[in-house]
Image (tube, rainbow, N blue to C red; front, side, top):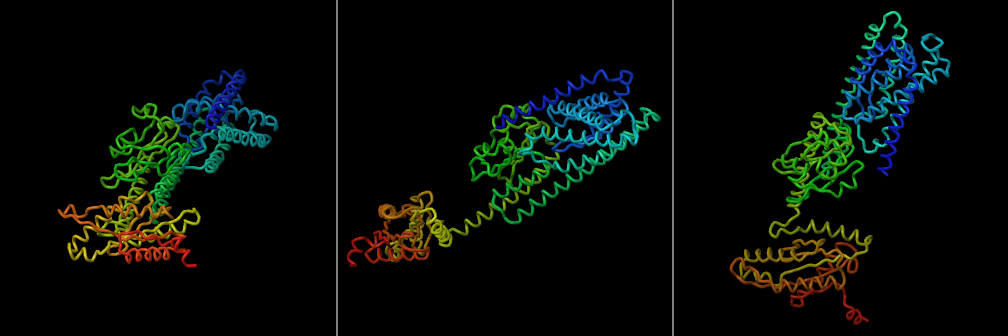
Length: 569
């Protein structure tokens, strides 16, 4: 689909250019050769207007219409078309701001077609060439509206393929609004120049035109203030979002979302490292390449992004096709021409990296890099706080002796499993383990040895857990195991396997001793044996008590065996 859009875009571009060339050829005989020198001066003024144009994401604003309108009234439509075409080609060729050359050709072409269409409607509405009289007011209004309409329609169609995923500092509506403001000054000045031309000549025309250039400079200053306001707004919104202590993914999503308000980019991706030594994985992606980027990874010291992480320096790549490393790197460097790479750090730790990209070269400058560096700094502080809170929560959820989860943490996990069990149709197994005759063991070997045995038992049990299982210290010498998905004979088999491994384990080897222990195990299953977490623990505790009363070193299930059920009748 994207390839089809690209082909249609190229066809549309060169159709407009081709029609403009044909129109210029048709108009060429109507040019007055005696006026060529004057027209070249007007072209020069048009180049100045294009160089001082106010750039937007959706186009650019200039006062060139003053020259188009005055040239149209003084020299005719052919001169207006040629002047606007040459001014656009030379002006945008000098100050193309990273646009491909076909954009300059397209803009020149659409100016020619806008003049041709406006001239046709001007004549159809009764306009008379060169007469700036009250009778020409309506035709001039038609000429202006037609020129603006054709201009905006062609530019809008040209930008359609690039609109998806493009983030700009100024919206299309703002561009049109300020364009109308430019025309508000340009139309009266163009008519005034045409009326005064016979009295003040070309030199007076040049002086009058400089007033529209002054308007452009004021507009550039106004846009600059608005852009600065957008940047400050982006910083403020990020700061407000971070007050809520979001997780790492939410932090990076907010950074990319708010970066769009201040930096023009098509695609953005934020990579974070899930744990020490692991590669950096994408946690937030925006733009048309989101699906492909979610399957990528960044390795520190490898590739353009990895080297930026290793060097700890943000970087602008103005054009990936000329960058010595980026031009050879596959993936994003081949799809985009301009890149901003900003590493995230917390002290000496490398947290991640943010990458912004645009299809056109020379899009980003040092101001954009500064904005992203500030946003990255905000992100790094938020990530550092999140990691500290996560580590603190992890520490608080652990038993200080065994390093296992404490009971409160396990209780929350059991509650969540019991809540989701009916929806996902899987059982929840619970196993309680108690060391047999542990008081006698402590009396014989000492309390310190008893604690060491408890630690070794916790390590042994923890090493035999499945991926989604969890274990906590349940009491003084008791452990509790959560086994999601384990029920029936499967639950009992797991408990029996654990019982045998504990029975065969030699404890206190590190202390130069040799000790063996046995345990009693009680099992219960949700929802078979209980209807809530409290009932599940009570059922497992009753089974554990039965195992201890029977002499220990055995597994007892809370489920009543079928034989026992038959004896009840």
